[in-house]
Length: 122
Length: 107
Image (tube, rainbow over all chains, first blue to last red; front, top):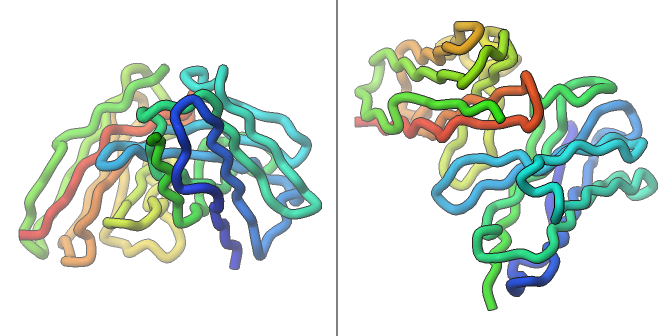
């Protein structure tokens, strides 16, 4: 059974960089799917941040593209999110998820992690 | 960017009642529309993919329909465990976007 687990600091100071990692178990990241990050501010809706393939090919949401980097480490079977210059508006639960389109980014997220709350505050 | 607008924002429903949630896209997205259920303090769960395709393990009371710009999620005979927020999501064009959500409460 495939599982995804987010990890990283729960508190980040304004103007600093948010860094999260998603560890995948029960499935090899190199086996052919895209992997994505989605966030949800408290009490609000969902926002796609970006997606990555095991080759390193990425797609980003233009609204965040200037501040986002998604990377992959196939040796550790995990992928990561970095969001720089954060503000209070970046406070959210951050989810990692598998994109269900085999060998292509379909945008259909079929497996999700539990999510991790990141608060931006001094 | 494609905007998805759901209606209603909130619905209070009696068990066994039928629930209908609509999602309208700002431009045609074919059948690239998916539905998720999110219970409190849980991650979203995929309910329906590509407008009407069922997902293994999801109860048959959940169904989807529509194409182009207008889509519907139907819950036949609502059960107490269906209390949740429901989101539509489009994967027709980047950036992928979600509707604002519909909260379903059990009376």
